[in-house]
Amino acid sequence: MVLMMNAQPSTYKPFHPSYEEMIFHAICSLKRRNGSSSFAIAKFILKHYGGLPKNFRKILLHRLKELVACQKLIRVKNSFKLPSQ
Image 1 (tube, rainbow, N blue to C red):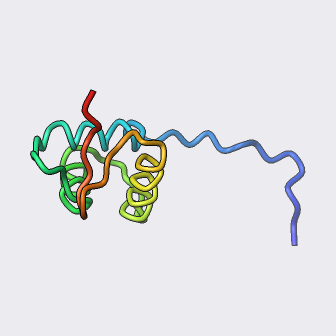
Image 2 (cartoon, helix red, strand yellow; image 1 turned 180 degrees about the horizontal axis):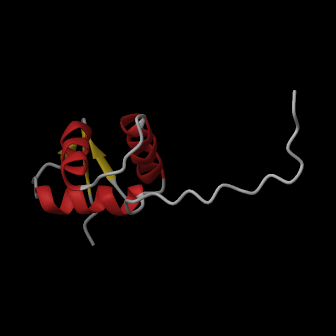
């Protein structure tokens, strides 16, 4: 087993904006009255953004739950929409 004492931190930068920005862009662009499903949001993001990891859908679902908990999104049945302001 070799230990790397002087290992540099990862400088990986994704080629896409943050998940929050991509989710908001998808919901605004889809313009569904009752909100957009996680499947529709994922499909929109895959179509418009590249360089996504293999576990993209899992990360997306996790971020959607976090945004609902922070009250930045509202969950209506199985759909998500922006809060009215």
